[in-house]
Length: 544
Image (cartoon, rainbow, N blue to C red; front, side):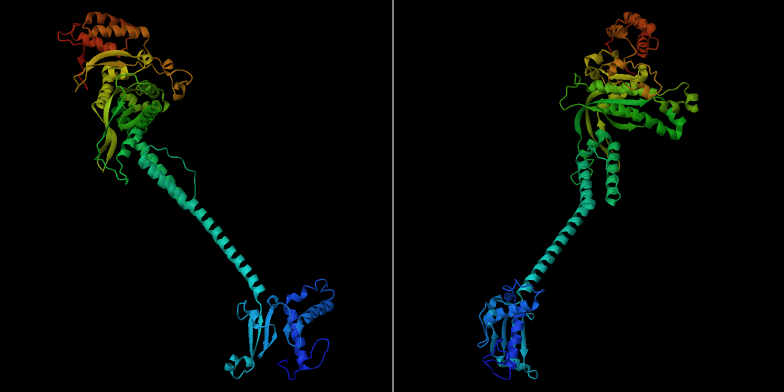
């Protein structure tokens, strides 16, 4: 029986149209189901719906009629494939049954309940007082799921890209510069002499900080020097604090001491310009030392201390590679360059300097000695210097002071001389054997007769790298002269002063300005050219 119409009619089909309301309802149901279920359209795909809409509609309805029993209201098709899964009018199943809805989600968009008692809402719970239609929401849900997946995927991709770009900018602008700065500071604390790479210009704050740190590090390296930076580095704790109360370290090195002559007069005449004057000299001396295996260590007004570190366990006083040759070479070069410097010559032409020291040109004295020393940080937390403490350092200073007495540019100790190569030894000459103040150990003194400088600029003086340095700047004395003078010195040391006197006079006749020869003659003359009875082959220097 059909429920929901005024009359009941069991024989109602599209083949027998009637005005019966029940049949009208069935025909309406027929159209609704066909409209909402795609299954009926599959066999009708061969009919163009746009070109033949009526024929296509008739085909759909015919498909439905084949599957639907109008007498029993049973659908012979697969209810699980339909969009409209279930229709119940009051207590009668009109299309499919409730089992077809078990696989569906029951949400407001899928299930519609119709209550026939508007006045009494509680009556809607009665199955006889309500109707229900259930639609499958699977296609929409699937489509919505795809959309949601696409949205989530897009959001994840957007977040990942945003995170990547942010991380990339953070790494480039913050993390990487900070890491470089931390690495720079850590490297300098571990090795104060670490090479500091120049950084390209940047417009961000971290770039300015990085450049400032690098400049600060370079200033520290310049301020302490190569040797000083290493010493200070050893006094830095793991936490970066400086501890001056740490024992020094014993080492061996060649020590060179250089001083600018007549510096007090130049200071009084140049006044404020004396800083430019002394720094110009320092630049020449430091570069000559640095380029010849040495390291500037300390500046004391007009004096400079340099060091050439020897390998651990080196035989002091014995030949050792070219380091001793390099030390002597740096002082010969510095001696010539201060005379050839056009900038220094302009300063020494100052009217006040020429008035006090007519014809003055910059001259320097150099002392070279080798031995052990204790290197370390000297001072307190208020002021600290990195230097060397040793009588050997003082000996280098006294040798420099001796250049004034012997009127030479360079004075070398016997120990240093023994470390020179054979070829360079041949270019030097022994000038005396003495004991200096504070020492009872006699030692021979040697000099290198620096040739006169005729160059007017440093460019004119520049050494030719294709030629040997010692061939370009040979000593002003010839080999025969040095051999002759060596005989005179040996006779003097042996106490044969009369014989020595003859040779010395012969040398002075050839070179009247030979300072060591004049000093040697003056010493012998003071004893009437007779060696004292207690003569031991050396004399004591009266001045430091």
